[in-house]
Length: 399
Image (cartoon, rainbow, N blue to C red; front, top):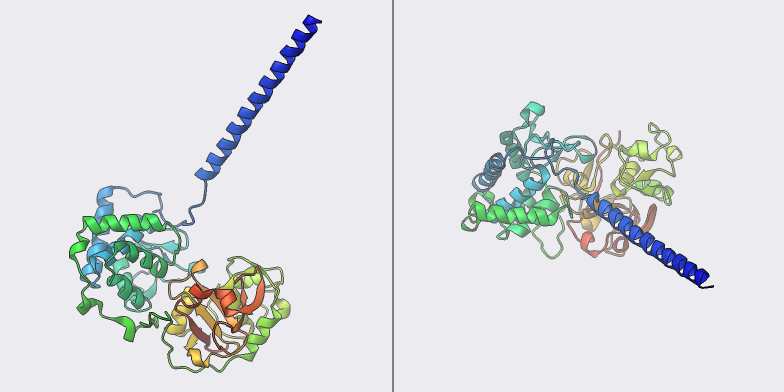
């Protein structure tokens, strides 16, 4: 009997020991998995390094950073805080490498070089090939943009007295990268502010100027509304656009997909709603793009995004032209977020009725739903984004 008891006790102890060992192993495995997941977590910014993943030397880094800082101060009239804010962004975007290539974005400020991110790189004609990817040429491009579609950014950042805030404005409105490594950008901006004596440099209004009265970005100095200035055009509305938008209610799954027609059409060369793939994928700007295309209007190859829609409607009018808020009609387009908007920083929709404020019905992809849906403007855009540089526009001409 005693032998049996001893044996039973021994087996029990062994079993308990085995259970404890398995528990410890399980905890260790779970901890390892969490560490692996944390180590591989996406940062949300895929374009923050030069092609080889690092800057070759800190001396070159500091030299280019100082050149960018000095250029913005001397040529654009930026305050020391404003210039430091831009420098902080360039650090994260490219490591100050003018040849940094993030795929569809290139250069010290990672401009779109064609495709899904638009084509800002070739504006002004300074950069025509990879051989032109020099800091000198890219600063010329920066100057061109700051005095054309990004005049509002020039004024806001150039007049800033806080490098942290300057960095945030540049990130959201020039880099079009809201929420991507914000703290890191701001930390470098503060370092540049100290290193380059930013506290001793005030904005130079004789160079910087005040863009509230002009500027192709259509910026408005009305801080209460944050809206862009209308260009004086009166909206006529568009029954074709509205009719097509309504036919697409319930279509698609929300996802960023380009080219738009390949992602939404069974027959990408078709021009009728019957050619549309109900189970396709697109986002808010892709939906508006598709409606314009199906209505027979000219659209850019591949697609557009809210920032490029804003820029075109308030600037060159290749595809869209701005109309006044008071004359925005059913079938017109509403865009929010400004010239640098994209992703969660911008949204666009088709007006389902004449504009009469936040309760106006709109048809949009996303905006609180996973497919094309109709809700009030306030529901779809929210009050913050809905009041961020809101403009109304309509297609320019049919094919």
